[in-house]
Image (cartoon, rainbow, N blue to C red; front, side, top):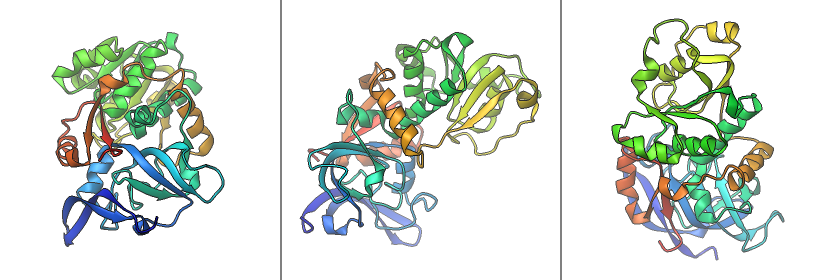
Length: 334
């Protein structure tokens, strides 16, 4: 088995700071040590994958490398005793696709604890339409729920709503009865977001209006923010008394220029969301919800699909901010 070859996207540093990408062959013996060998059926394309594929050393330090922070497939070998050959599992987070060869290869080898047994109610394909983006959205909703933000509390704002995390957050929240206000910078995304369940679609300028003031009129019972920066600061300033804001991204900016007034005068909670090192119990709890009560009703409407050969075009699109929803990567027939 160790001499078996498989296809993978291979990123190489041909000379200092110059990176190339190609579809090539690797051997299973090239994979790192680990308890679990998985035949990958599906992966998905995330912004972090595009950064890794273009040689961003903040994401990936060791080359040659195969990106892909998501993977779902079938167990081939397991030495930890937790899984049997043929078991279906999914993997998101940890070091997969960063410095550990990831889901853009037909096989991965990982520690057992990185894997989650595929929950009842999800197919391998569906699990990767959800992927890290959907899991992150699920963690945001889970934290809002635990903070007491209930559907009758008022509007919930979702920034970056046409992206991977935002799209699935809109769908989950709407399915649970929340009135969702979706923020997007894409003028043609309105119908798409309303179809996912958004009650209202607004532009960024509607959130940022008056944001130079220390406090804004109370508007949001809760917020799912993937943008960071000025949008996050404005959303916090307009969150209602006792409301909660989840923060899971920095596409706008990693900086947060805000005073303490919303926290000490309105009791607003700012909740950080990390999907990479998320502990096992909340990880399992959120995946069970995503396979059941929270399963988005419009998964197929949020996704486009490609094989390994189509990844180059999709990588360029996501770097330009031109991808809407999720990009599924099919490996079973690659």
